[in-house]
Length: 282
Length: 267
Image 1 (cartoon, each protein chain N blue to C red):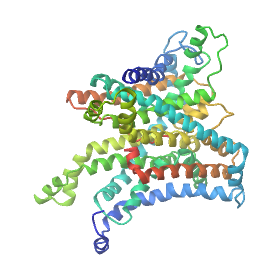
Image 2: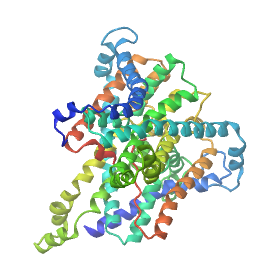
Image 3: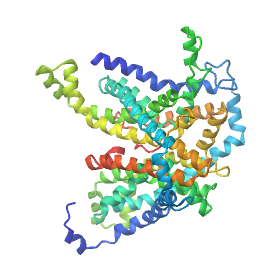
Image 4: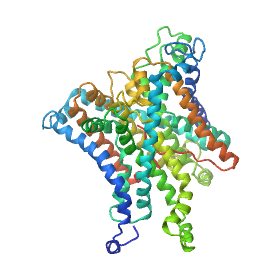
């Protein structure tokens, strides 16, 4: 801020507050209060105690689900990086026309509803679907069950979240000055060494952005794991929904929701300190 | 390295494209369950979609809710964005972060909150409740787009108008609003799409009476995978395609580089 504090207090401007007030009040009533409701329920449902947290943090079922969620989110992030990086590279180093077509495709995927993409994977991986047919064609008599497994939900999540990674990495790659690469080459760097020491570090901000975004979205992912995953290997969001919707266990559900929220906010706060949150979604 | 990246890139293109394309032939299939390639083709499921109230009512609900959400979001966000971009005041940094908070909170957490809180208020299973919830979720997205636009605004244009004798109101209506129009349109569009696509909160609070299209699709995929979903998917697919291709073509005509991007939000 360029304005000194004394100047601000001197000229107390009422305008910004008037303009902000409607939204502020609205968000207080319809965002902060419901969120606080979750926090309160986690302590008072069914009776006032820490029992919900004790159960959520030490119960074997819950620990397994949390661990599973973390590992899945980490694995999905890595896969998104593995598919996103080469694609971003292809876009950044192709003729404008090719690059634009790929960008169009990625944007299409980005904007297509999660549900539509989840449904598409159900078709692709179904027992009467093309992938099973292909496996049978190449001689596998008893193809494995693909749908409703960890495999199907992970694959679909990678597909759904990859565009976030691609967009972030691509926007960084596009801005790399080719002169930097040329000068590295003139100094003798080539192949793997050029990539490892010059290109990769230059694209690191995009990787960081994309990874944080994918990881955080994946932690709280509800729709795709519920529809495509195995009921025995739930992720945290699915279990929260299950507790609240089926068992009306608002206390337990809320405690899990709070743990998920705190983890998410910690990751985003660390990120915010280093880079600024607005960059993540900008 | 280069060739390896390129080949992997091409394979990834197929991976990204296949699921998007497959829903189109599926929608013309005459199979009653998921089967690909389809045993035969007909338009029966299109007729089913356009005549079945079980699908049309949720579609209508979604359009209604998304429209109301957009109006409410813009009414709240436009003045707030002016305050945050054009004024300096104490607590602005916190206010800026607060604007983005709904993006940071996983939707399942909000869903639990709304389910309980709106239950107490008697707002579950109502259009009004879904609109109120969706507006919170649309605020940060509309704000990001609009504030980016407002930051790039050349205020000399307003000063020029005022030096020529226009009052603040006149300046706002004749100078500020027209220049901001693209930003306003795009942020409204994002708010609309955010609401139209939102699934998790809608699953928990919309109920039978205000059932949205994503909720209906979710239930249908979970229960029987009604082939009508392929029809809706295809329709949505083409709406998105037209929506994205139109600016591409428009900008190609004006021979300017396109810049499609979207602040992330949907969980």
